[in-house]
Amino acid sequence: MLTVQNLSKKFGKKQVLDDISFNAKKGEVTALIGVNGIGKTTIMNSIAGLLPYDKGEIVIDDMPVRKVFAEKVSYITDSSIISPNQTVDEAIDFMRTFYPNWNRAKEKHLLKFFRLNLKDEVRSLSKGNVAKLNLLLGMGLDTDYILMDEPFSGIDVFTREEIARVFTSDLLDGRGVLITTHEINDIEYIVDKALLLDGGKIVKEFYPEQVREEEGKSIVDVMREVYLQ
Image (cartoon, rainbow, N blue to C red; front, side, top):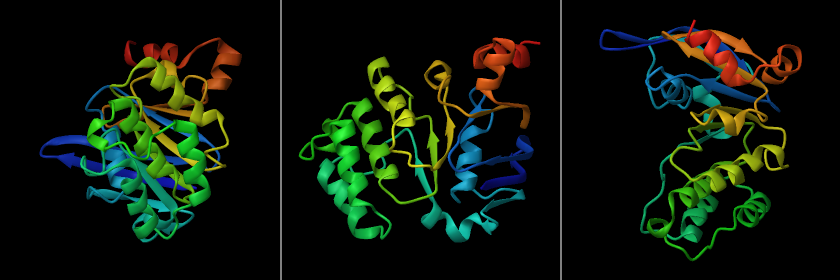
């Protein structure tokens, strides 16, 4: 289990995260939801070790995340993480060379799933295909958890649908996913647990399927209740 406990972070005088606590389980998709600037990416970068935080603890299976991140976690952002001069094949070959937990069987499966051309240069790819390549590079690693920061950002509806199919395929292979996104409709039926952030805190934690069945409400309906009350 990925556990975030009492996480706090200030930027100057602004308290971006204020004693945040939650967990994300293997085999589940957990969504961090909130308006721009609410702290979603700050949480992701804190887990990834890219941003020092002021207080709190982040552990994976009872081990400090900094000790096991490379082995246990993949981090997929909404921007290209490789040189624009590289080809798709060169980007993948970098992963093969420098990451001992790269899985060639998954690589083959993901290439077929996303229909990427190995000879294409990254700079020639559409934003949607860059998003697919980033997903491939993250999901090709044998890790227990995947962080996805705005994977649907700025891409067309058809590519969003294609990426959403990842969550209902066997590509996740029982891994835990922590995702941030503004495209709520794209994640309505793939999220197991939703966390709503406001004022630096988690103000609502719920299970969308349960809420749909018992109350007939969507994620957006719950958001309206929380943010517009």
